[in-house]
Image 1 (cartoon, one colour):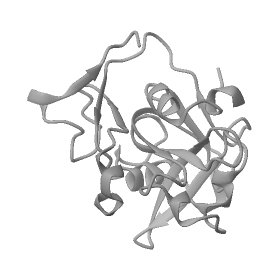
Image 2 (cartoon, rainbow, N blue to C red):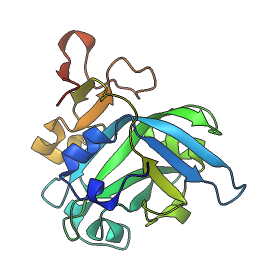
Image 3 (cartoon, rainbow, N blue to C red):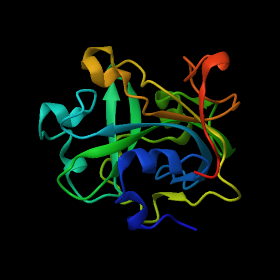
Image 4 (cartoon, one colour):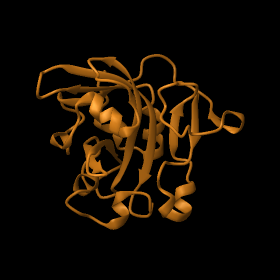
Length: 198
């Protein structure tokens, strides 16, 4: 079942947790293939107050979609060559989003999907899907099947510049999942787990 708009309109940290285990589907405009994967790692970015979030630098042409309706795709380039896929959350104007960091291939994916750049390469996702409605038919997420997985948390990656915000434990991953990107969210001996029923 495709996730409805209401799913994305909730608190961003909650959306980030609840995306784990969901299927991400991209209908490739080049070859028509339906590329599918299962999300295993996410990071929450919580608006202008969060110095690790792109919205902290204000409303720009790049971040415009973040300020709009929840349930849309925010894609941006890093290092001038790697696309990253984000899901816009919360009501319009709050500019919050969830970065999908890693996934497990299910169908027609190219290579591994461990890391945000690899995920976009494997799904053939690029700037053409910027602003795509995730409640549409070209790019969307489907509800998780089965029980909620056990989740581990950690600090977000490559945001040391964000001061105290860099220490927010807003990175979420499925426990013991090999496809989770490095560095792993937590050393195994001291990881914090979120019980599957929360």
